[in-house]
Image (cartoon, rainbow, N blue to C red; front, side, top):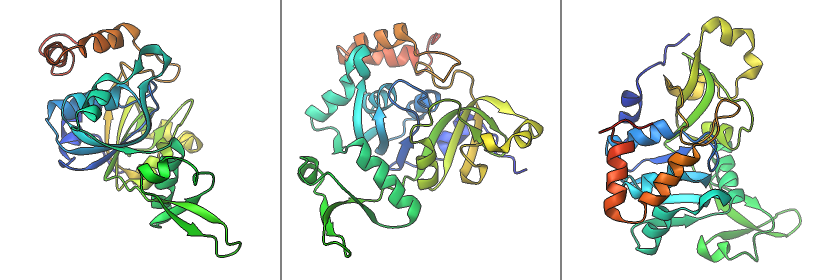
Length: 272
């Protein structure tokens, strides 16, 4: 079994500035937040983030100046805290290139990359404002003559995914909703996998059918308990309402936001 275990510092150091980075999970659930915080600590810059529906992970990376482009269908804190404050402010001020998508088009773009084609057609988009917002082209079905929107492939340089369990070879298990994590893993050039618990080789091989992210796609594996915090992680823990409330409050001013980053991300005091 190829050993892929490493440290979070080393794994994130392998990501170059300007990379296209897909983030696993969905809104407040199973986002790779420990890795997100390490991206901030290492002062990565000019990343493009790819996500169907993001929340804290995308917002904090935009607010910290790590990401300046986002391809996503939705960024917000669900009905819990509403819109994403740093994301919205950066978009309104022109500091962020918002590559507007529907979740459907992000999924289609990832599937196109998986299939090795430059685009895939989708139905039901021709009357959407996204046709103009994304400058989507159209194609004609050679069999029926029907016109379809053509969604360009997205091939991330790296996908960062947090799972409940993984072995040292990178075989990852997800319990509960998979979201688009399996698509991101297959579409990306490589995967960085953080996990709540590291499996032994024996445990992993006893039930190979539980593997969702095959190790062949993974370049780095890191055991990070609570690695999705402050987001939830399946049945292990829920999202941290108090932490997120402090975050939203800190977004009221640049000074309070910088203080929050110093305290909770850069590690100048205890984070929990």
